[in-house]
Length: 326
Image 1 (spheres, rainbow, N blue to C red):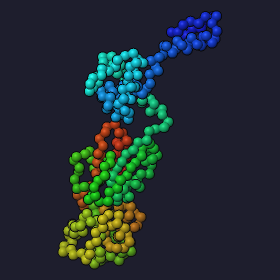
Image 2 (image 1 turned 45 degrees about the vertical axis):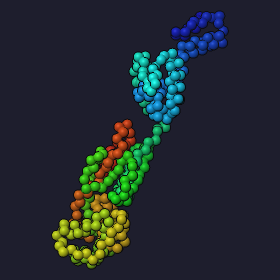
Image 3 (image 1 turned 90 degrees about the vertical axis):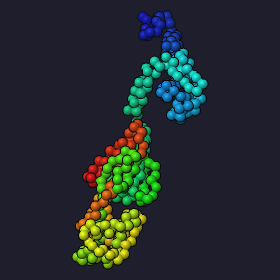
Image 4 (image 1 turned 30 degrees about the vertical axis):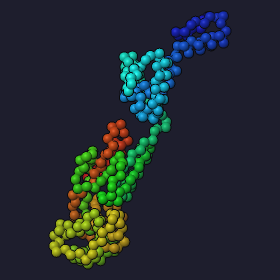
């Protein structure tokens, strides 16, 4: 009887089992020695072959240039091949290096994809977005329900801006209110806004039947970024010789809505972003006429890296979430 191992030597009946194991192990080690090459060396090689710079490779892999050089030299020693020609300020692939890169790169990509597919612990991603604080509180945050279940590996970083006059913070995306579509970046049109006079329920009962003239007897509230909005509304509805008794400007739309809810006066409230205040009875329309605005909300993308799929996922989610508001 003989023990046969494919591509390895034949062991006869007189050899002991220990001798068999030892000889088989030695021959396997000789046969698969190139497989001892560390994966990090192959990864370093692929990146270096792509950018032809050890310094850039080190930057991409968060290593030192000397570490990159050492790993590639170790790879060359293991393979007994020269993969790069080292020049004074650059590197170039040898002909052998080019053939090796063309063969190994698809395998490395397939390996990375397979590991990603079967990995039980997904890499956490993050997308940052900035928007007006009133948009965040009235629309964005309430509609975040279900985001974590749908995209459990994507963290969101939300920055709010009090008004258009405040400087925009650098984020991957931003939602802005503007009279024209931004041209310097990729921008998506969300929806326009209009303004309607509103007050609390008690004041509505007292003031509604008195017509437009009541607006000259009570405080009028608006956002300080639109100081002439009440005059434009009056002109829009044909209310001539409009002489308001008092106009109070506040620095945030939430303050404007809250002040009207508390009974300070009549406010110009934006729609559809403030629909929740009317639905829950916090505010009521004093008059039905709306002031149409040139302002629209836009979603703007600042990071154009095509490999950051998480940004596109958030864009798609926002466009779908606000589809009914268009």
